[in-house]
Image 1 (cartoon, rainbow, N blue to C red):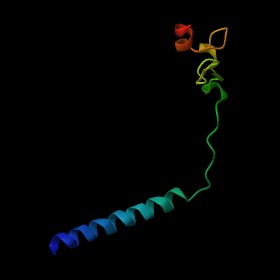
Image 2 (image 1 turned 90 degrees about the vertical axis):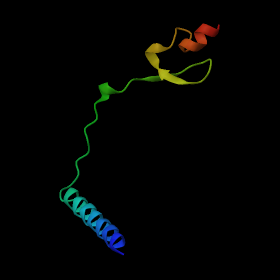
Image 3 (image 1 turned 135 degrees about the vertical axis):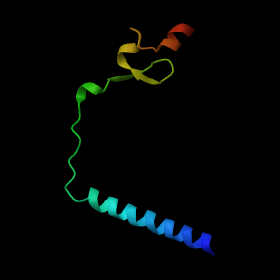
Image 4 (image 1 turned 120 degrees about the vertical axis):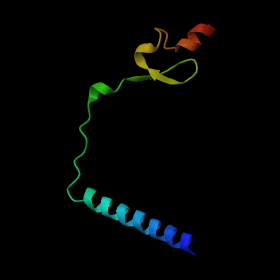
Length: 71
């Protein structure tokens, strides 16, 4: 019986902490994170296998490294 009470009290404390944290994070309006266009790479599809890879890793014929090794 004592173990059951400890578990119930622990769950109740966990629930109260979760509710308080959610209220404190919702206190102000959320600002969207600014996007940095330089952090993204342009992707291209390999003409051999169809996998998307960074465009600068494709060969002149539009194939990825593994497809270039095969041919």
